[in-house]
Amino acid sequence: MNPTDALARISIVLSRTSHPGNIGSAARAMKTMGLSRLVLVSPKSFPHPEAETLASGAGDLLAQARVVETLDEALADCTYSLAVSARARDLGPEPMLAREGALNLISEVQAGAEVALVFGNETAGLSNEEIQRCQGAVMIAANPAYSSLNLAAAVQVLAYELRVAAFEGAPVVESKSTPFASVPATHGEQEGFYGHLEQVMVETGFLDPAQPRRLMPKLRRLFGRARLEKDEVNILRGILTATQTRR
Ligand code: SAH
Image 1 (cartoon, rainbow, N blue to C red):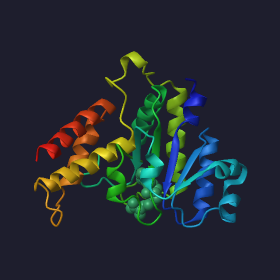
Image 2 (tube, rainbow, N blue to C red):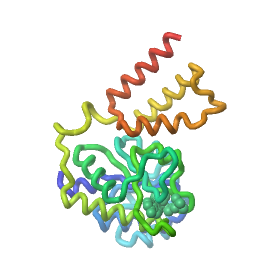
Image 3 (tube, rainbow, N blue to C red):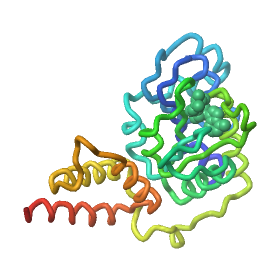
Image 4 (cartoon, rainbow, N blue to C red):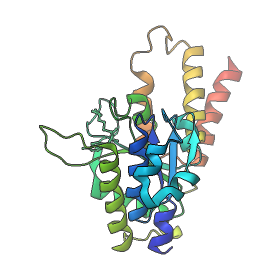
């Protein structure tokens, strides 16, 4: 796949954005680097004239933007998503630096995967739940005493790194040499598995819903590291179903 096509297939997901101006600036940042797929999760105000103004010549990206209610909907068809966050989180994936994150995304796209970068709200950033729904995390190395960039500025940095990675030729993963034995599980399939696992743990008494502690986040982290494949999700869910029918 040529670099231009690779960039055009990457989704930029903005979660719960408060300021419509930031949505416009993010669209502009994307278009300057050849990105075009914008997904908005429950934006506070959109469409909005301020978004149009700040998008400048990138109004077409706003017009094509997909607006959804939840991050799960935004990521449903993705097999690889990275949370963009300034802070390393408890139990979240170990963050990589922007350059490495961009290279990984380009390699995945080249291998045919659906991929996304997820950015958080201006005030609160991404919640732990949102970060745990991604396969990895990326941070922009910044001044430790003041490390929080404006949302659209963060989109610009990552978009630039993606462009550099795409054109410098990230190692092209041929279908023969993908790390996957089958095809990677989609976000929707992974969430189906986590829901099923939680249900069986409750049914068997292993998990007390009144005192869940940090069991699910820890298990999400474990399976997130493993990069589950479709076949593996089917096997795991088969085991869960067998446990349910035997009891
Ligand atoms: N106060 C929030 C910052 C929100 S900034 C917090 O502490 O998390 C809005 C978004 O821009 C963040 O959710 C993140 O996606 C991105 N961002 C800002 N600075 C960043 C940095 N240094 N590294 C990675 N992402 C950053």
